[in-house]
Image (cartoon, rainbow over all chains, first blue to last red; front, top):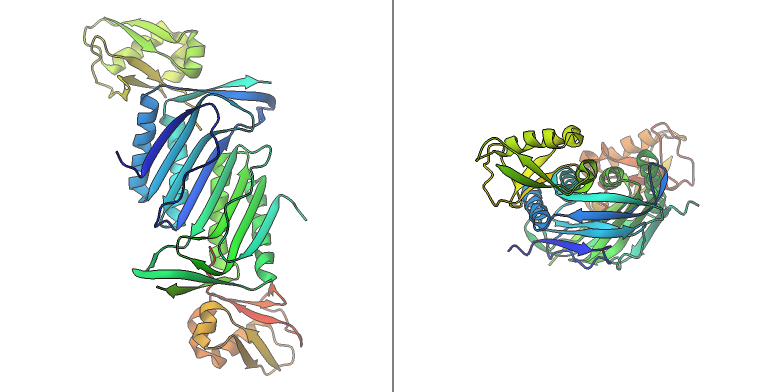
Length: 128
Length: 128
Length: 82
Length: 82
């Protein structure tokens, strides 16, 4: 198991970030996805996320590993909710440590974009 | 004064982040620049930053405003150190709130890239 | 052979079920055979199948991968993480 | 006219001073006139001047902007924030 990669699936909303930048990092980026109060102009109450474990964790880890290799990252930590996450709460967090800014930011975009296309996680809207 | 934009110059290293995502945000990104232990393979003790106030704050604010307009951000907060920042400490933090991921990440890259080219801040290396 | 395919998210909603049985004319169906059979078994899924992949035992399957009896088969499509 | 130009960071190090006096042949020099005069006054800066801008009273100056007596003039180049 590679300690530089961590993947956590959490029931309900994510708590505050507890990850720390690694020793040699020059760049540290924390991206959070938050449930917005509106979708298509309709007021939302919550999003309900569904995972397919252990495949979801497996695919997130595989993607984290590929992203780390491609961009030469130092660390990558992924946290994602399952179940109900209310408006204003955090459902996703990606924390990346890298030597330089450029690769950290590109890696964040690449990871999230690939996750949204291919990782088995689904959401259902719960309107207010 | 626009409360959605904040610019702070801090003497010495930055403390922990205290900014919070705005009410409607779907994406929240916090980028931190940390002083690396090596530059060009030589062990570093610290970076010493120099600003030219009030121009530095003025240019950071102007850049924040332009970045917010270009990318349609909700909020943008910039924190930058002056003076000595030791290895492992944080010298720069950019916090962006946006409706969606794409504009938040692009805005972070654009802001930092432009800052490094044009904002009057200088650093001097203090080798170990 | 009869294969049970797990459905999730919007595809479960579209099909009105979280698990669908498909009949295939062979005893060693490939992932592609299952996807083709799904089109007939659940026409509501047709539009989303081209952007979906089959997982066999929690791993994405190659097109020509054979489904064995007892395998856990799932349709992975219309994902929306983040 | 004699104009004092503030230097910072690596350019202050290169020139060996944090403020340099330049003499210009006119009483209403432009920002470009000052940059040209800096090349002669501090040859060590030559390589970095093309990527530098002049600030007048804490605002970046246009090339043809006139420096008035009493203005605070600064050379902004080789910046390295972040």
